[in-house]
Image (cartoon, rainbow, N blue to C red; front, side, top):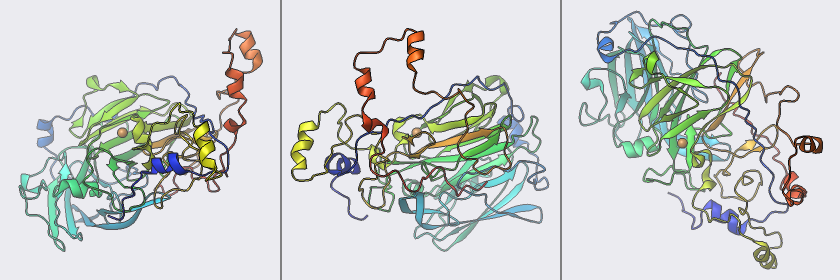
Length: 486
Ligand SMILES: [Cu+2]
């Protein structure tokens, strides 16, 4: 580990930021409430274990476009495969991945597969025979576990218990027939604390062989994780137990997480998997409701599918949700734990809310002319200020939006639903129909509806600081990521 600075990034900001401009910009992330989506079921009824264990054995390899619509791993990829004598053959290479970029400004030396963090998504169909080679290019032994998948015990990938560890330089072969369908994962099962903290994990999606319901039109998969990367360093710290500061979807943080794009009326599936070390994540989607249709244990019977807008994805589990995208707009998808939608600066800082810093700032300006304490009204402006910060670290909140700065980081992205889409490229920000955006109430509105304002409301409103960028606006708007895979 490189030098661990004596002060956290937040302390740095609160105690020593020197900026030329003025103070806060109001955050105006609008979220419109919409009528719930229509009822919709997905896939077949519950597949209980006894059924799954009397499997379709060695069926012909399932084909994308015919047997399933391929899953989309935003910011990730799907592991290529080939068919050899009726068996789908895959090759994972566990290796160090230098300079993995979580978002512009923060790179770290991680462990991953095939040059990626996290590893590519393995995709197959119920009844497929799969053969997965695992080559270990890491400096330590490893073993790969296929999480939630029914297989012979010796294929379970638990180092020491069901197999020898895969030593550096060695290649192991795993082979089994997929007897189920669902959202699953793969991850290291050797020195788990270290190897999973560094990124040795990926998604394993098995499509149903004979789906009973309509297939999803858009099928997105996210692997949730958390990291401790001390600002200024570039190696995730596997020893951290509680104070994580980078919260990721597919090993990216907002604003680098690709948006999900769908046409109005399409059936959308989102698969959440959580391999964080210590934290569960309540995933919340705006604009629609969804049914929780599956877990890593399999499909949930239709009668037990809960209607939700938030689904808790516990550590070591997956949740699949299905809905119809029946409301156009830009709808946030994010973890509802507020510290999980922050980047590195959101931790370990002094609480300055409500502190009158006038006298303090005045005294300090004798020595540092442009000094200004920050944080006394909150942290919403921390990302946009362009203040000096430790090298290789992220501002605690996100990126510019269409109305103002979006004061979120970490586990946050956007579902973009549009009536007309030529393709699934990012269509840009939603163009709201006239009269459908929340905005400043007019004097006529207030008068008509008899709204009495508090006496000091006008004086708060008149602060010019509330309408100005602090310093220069970002020259390079980092909206949502450009390196999505579809
Ligand atoms: Cu969370």
